[in-house]
Length: 372
Image 1: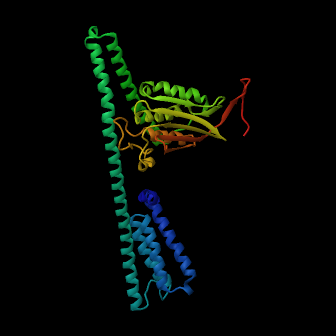
Image 2: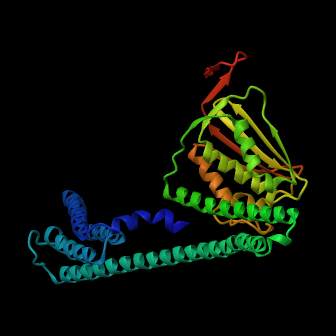
Image 3: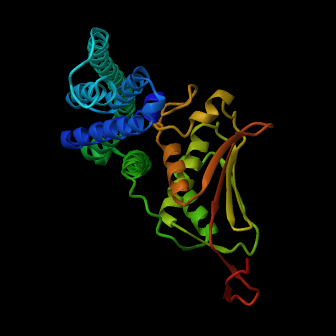
């Protein structure tokens, strides 16, 4: 937004102590006045007045009203003492100069006050915009979480009550079904809590990947195993060439990345769809692709899917729109990038590209570092 990019320096400067504001405003006026005085043989007093008014406007854009009013008074005195005849005293020589000095002082005060007021109005508008945005995000989060937490909690309570109420009437099949419901609801609840915690970690700026040597096949296999309850009706294909090197990355963060991508593919594609995971190395970059053969996304939504709390308009019930924003944050924590594209034949393709260190295996089974 315009406000956030262009007015952040203003807010930081305005937080200076009043003492610093007085000092800097006086320094600005003295510096500009000294330059004008050195050039006074070539400048009319009216031009000097215009330059001082411009300097006063700049001061008013940054500082509080009291330093601005003092600057207006000091600039008028400087103009009178050094530039109006007779010089080097505060006495004004003729009626025309008295009127000119009075008009300068009035214009300086009005200019300073109006500029300060405009800045205050801009700050108020910016605060209102930020409050509206925060309120919208809060309502979105509250509405989503109220459903996402209530549904699995209700499932857990209902299944637990049935198990505890009259266990003798339940068959082994019924018990297993209720326990499965509890397990699935617990996993769903745990996933939402993890997403909230991960979002908090990203916003705090304390994400520091703890890189270690990882077998990508093992990482992908573990991810699929954890999601078995959710992707059981989908066909998952993993394509990684033989002899794929070990790569150095944060196992936990990348497991979250793959979990959210695969879960997202399973959530937004019909049963029986294919989810394909491929990996390869190009020079010093690791390329991971997660794609499906579902309906894909409308082109207008592709640039929004990584935004926090964003959910596609045609999304099914489930999720609060945090998964893909976490994916983007964790990939960027590895100095990588992720992009989403629609597949022409149908489906969505997520492509992760990140720089990694690699460790290759020779035919003998000994570890050797590759030459770059």
